[in-house]
Amino acid sequence: MTVLSLHRYPVKSMLGESVERSTVTARGLLGDRAFAIYDEESGTVASAKVPRLWAGLLEFSARFAADPEPGRPLPEVEIRFPDGSMLRSDDEGVDTALSAALGRAVRLIAEPPEGSQFEEVWPEFDGLPVDQLAPEGLIEGTTARREDSGERVSRFDVSAFGAPGTFFDLSTLHVLTDSTLDRLRELAPDADFDPRRYRPNVLLDGTAPGFVENDWPGSEARIGAVDLRYSFATMRCVMTTLAQGPKASGVPEDRNTLRTVAKHNRIEIPQVGGVWACAGVYADVLADGEIAVGDEHTDPA
Image (cartoon, one colour):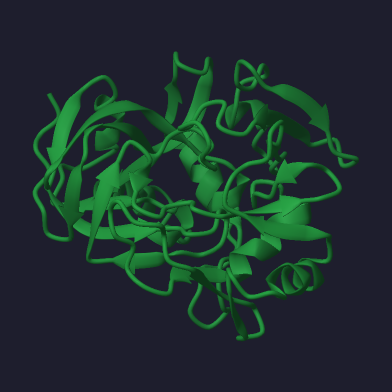
């Protein structure tokens, strides 16, 4: 297996950038999820996993103004707005512009405020009960509420499951194979399984057919110069169904993508409890190093 592509997302829930190589640490690809949008009213870190409020974040894109370097402060981030305008993370008016574009009072942050939380919606699809996406109890350690629509919402503390002081929901490194995407395409030829929909950090090719990542949790592997341990399968949510980026070149809305995953690849995840609709796998970094496109991935053992 080899690395087909590498991706980092400088601002949580915005589109990110592809890179040819990256330093990888216990906090993931250098610069990944370095910033997030903070909602002043609710005290939550914005996530497109609550589409009613934050689906618009997927119309923005973010990239670093210069390549991040290990041991040095991260460079500023350039944020491209849906109208094509661009501001940097250090521009004086960036919070005002983001608030105007998103229709809520927000600010760009580099560290989660104490007590801040994430939210995630679990939608009802036609012909697909919500308990086929996630178990009734949701994730241990979360609280739950319901939207006015009746949809369930889970809320959990920032960094409760990811690296402390970061904006990761569950893990700092997400690996996906083109074998899984190809299998999903076989199962639902009319659906759109663009890899951008799943926001992997590492996309691998040259793998065996099928949902190969299902067998990896608990094993160790090496990608390039990075040693890692696979932890658990990646649970999928409504965010994967949403439109991303410009209409001409982005990813279209497609609810059948999540429906297909839930129908054909539901995995029991002991770490969080229950059986979940999954595609891909999370990993913990055991030894820092560098990964580049074309690097080899050792067989998990």
